[in-house]
Length: 412
Image (cartoon, rainbow, N blue to C red; front, side, top):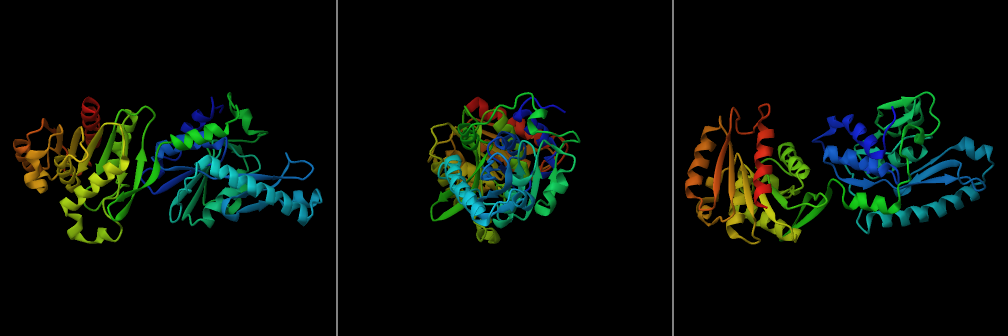
C-alpha cells in the first residue's frame, strides 16, 4: 500500500483503531512526522492530542546513525550492540545524552507553547508515528508513557517491517499496523508525498487539533473538560450531561462529533467533581448545575455565538442557565430532557429551544409537551420515531445529532 501523504496514512490508521472510540484515550504523536498522522487518529477517536517528544542518540562521529533514543521523564533505549561495535565510551554516551536531553526539553516547550503535557495517568495511550524502522524512538516513547502512569500503551503506525513487533518487544501492550513489508528499506518508500513536517506545523496541529483537555474554573471548583474548536468555527455549543454521566458520555460525544464536522465548536465537561458525583442530592441540584454551566460558559470567554445542549437533567440545567441570560446564548437543544426540573424559570428562557424526545418515552414526552406550552421563546418539539429515553435504537441517535446540528447552524 502506498499512502498519498501523512493525512491519508492517519485516516487509514484511524480505521484500525475505532474500537477505542468512547474509551479514556490520549493520542501522542512523535514529532515531527508522526504528529500529522496522530492528529487524524485523535480526530477519529475524539481524543486529546499531545506530543511524545523523543530524540535519537546519534554516534559521536556519525550522528545520523542511532545508538539509542530518549524521551521525556528519563526514558531511554540503548542499542548496546551499536555502542560496543562503535566503541562508544560511557563518557561519550553521557555527553550525547546530555546534549539531546537539553534539546528535547527545548522542543517540548516549543511544541506545547508552555502548556503542561496532557495527563496519561490511568489512561490508554496511543503512540503514533508515520512509520517504524529501528523502533528505538517508539520504544522510548512507550517507556515514557509507562513512567507517567499510563494503564495501557498501544503503538500504532501506518507502515513497518514484518518483524516490527519483535523490535518493539514488551514496551507496548499492543501493536497496530495496517501495512507491513518484507522489503522494507525506509518509511518514505510507502508515501507519495513524504515532505518533512516542520516545527511550525507541529505547533499548529497541537493548537488546532481535534480536541484538547481543559480545566474549567467554576466558582470554587475546577472541573475537567474537553474543548474542540474546528478552524473557522461558527459557534460553540456547551454540553450539560445527565445524571450518572460526564464528559466521556458516548451519546454526547456522538452528537458533539456531528457538530464538529459541521464546523461548530463544543465543550464537554463534568458538571460535578469526582467527590460530588456520589452525592445524589447534588446530581439533581438543578440550580447548582446551572450555575456550573453558566460559569463554564463565562470561562470560555468566546466571541463566537454560544449554544447549550442538555441531556436529561442536564437539559433542565441548560434551560435554567439560559433563563438567567448570563452569558446570553443563541440556542438551546434538549435531548430526552426534564424541563419540569427547571420549574418557573421556563417562561424566562429567550433562546430558541428545540426539545427532542423519543416517541416511546411517554412520560418524558408528556413533560416536554407541557414545557412547550410554558416556554415563550421560539420552541419546537421533535419526536424520534421508535426511540426510547436513551435513543439506543438503530439510527435514533443519528437523528438527534442531525436535528441538533441543523438547529444550531440555523440559529448561531
